[in-house]
Length: 293
Image 1 (tube, one colour):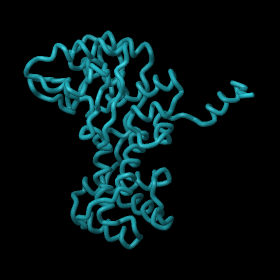
Image 2: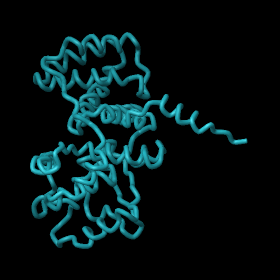
Image 3: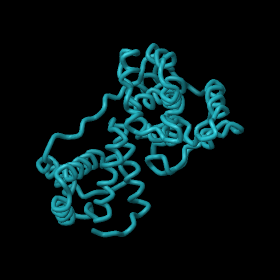
């Protein structure tokens, strides 16, 4: 398999692919896995032709375990599904070949998509008043008010909070796209953030620590059984992000603003992520009976 570096165009397509998977509702671990699998396909130039694709599939079947090969097939299937939304021009014959292979080559059941929804106002109030471990409450607070992904929250360090200029810096190394972004700290959120940063213990590095000097693990961040019993509904880290996006949309109707702070690669991804219907917006525009002069 070629060890050549991916081109900027390939990296852009992979970034867009990851955003589409997020909009579809896949968990971060699945997005990372599928992106890694498609990176291998790009390195092998598997999408250049049908013959090249066939060679790639045969090579991966020999090299990977059953589970690994399933993941490769799932990644290709998702890529074929989202190809029309990506900055890539693929031969229709190749797309059909991918579809046929993916429908028959998989060895077990497909990956399940998580139940994504925005929390209601009463549920948000329940989260705000939740009796839980301190780091868990702050995980919820950051997720709902900044719209970060689980890994981005867990990776936050105290210097990421610029209290002087009132910005939260999301370091590139912690993001899915490996691109830096910043999010303003609003006046309403600032007091909680300022208090936690000011009370930082000498040994602490991460904004959230389950144990002394230890970053909160992904497993811990997904384990909310006691809290769910109190609340009466299931907590999913990604639903915090989705709630942030939904609330911001209801407050602003500004898709560019939401795209910027979610870190999506295009407004179209954000449209899809929020499951917004264009016809609903068209009707809203008609109801305004808008006229400039």
